[in-house]
Amino acid sequence: MDESEPGQGRGEASFDFTGRRVLVTGGGSGVGLATAQAFAAAGAEVVVIEVNAAAAAVARDAVPEVMVDAVDVTDATGLRELVSARGDFDVVVNNAMICGDDDFLSATPEQMRREIDVNLMGPILVSQAVLPGMISRGDGVIVNISSINAALHLGNEAYSAAKSGLQSLTRSIATEFGPAGVRCNTVALGTVETPAWTQRRAADPGVLARLSGWYPLRRVGTVADAAAAVMFLASDAARWVTGTVLTVDGGFTAGNLRMSADIRGHDDQTAP
Ligand SMILES: NC(=O)c1ccc[n+]([C@@H]2O[C@H](COP(=O)([O-])OP(=O)(O)OC[C@H]3O[C@@H](n4cnc5c(N)ncnc54)[C@H](O)[C@@H]3O)[C@@H](O)[C@H]2O)c1
Image: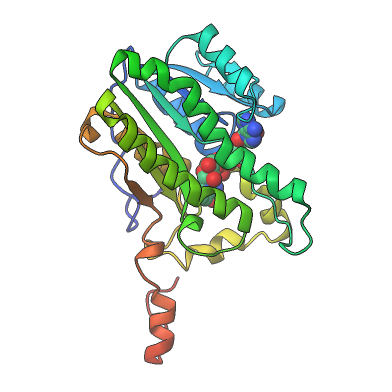
């Protein structure tokens, strides 16, 4: 990354999670993999849940010290068994997702239901499995990975509805279990370059470069940008932050330069 460019930052933030036990769902790819790597590098003992065998192998290769379990986030029994086998967690990152490109009017109930299941029921079931341990220790942090799609329509109706529900779940858990010492927050991401974009990029190689023009910071996000936000919310630096949404989107939802230029009748001078 060229740090001389605007919006690139000046190096990585550093956090210490020595001795902390961290669970990352969907940790074999993209944001989840980078987050698992970042926590391991910061001294945490990391467990990854991953249903995709190829992604699980990637996680094992990339971070050999991480434990990878083939549990589906929609499998309540499997999740409870995982917690019994692996023990309690200090930090849990609800990151696993699926996002179809289905046409809303022709998508089957099964397709829509699966998106709601993985993206919303998954975090509900994971939270139910891990919260008893956090409550009994009087300490724990849950970070839910949402999307700017929760706040505005950009396509993917069922996925977006699930992400909106996830932000409500964040508030509920923060309120209900705050007195027991549990914090819960959301990271709402804008476009992040991950394998989730592989198919769309194969069909349209310029899609991410074009998308960059919609972001005030003139680039899409990296997995490191996302992992840094998760680490902050999981860390003691955020000890009085709970029930909130940290939007990590390069300024996308702050305003719309292109619309503003169009209304004022001149070009977006800052466009790449
Ligand atoms: N990439 C983006 O542009 C973007 C934008 C906004 C929000 N997000 C959010 O960031 C998070 C990570 O996205 P990503 O782009 O890294 O996705 P990704 O597709 O690269 O990784 C998601 C992982 O979740 C796993 N997974 C799917 N279903 C699962 C299940 N039932 N149980 C366990 N694991 C399962 C997949 O196998 C995959 O490895 C998601 O919550 C996503 O909604 C991503």
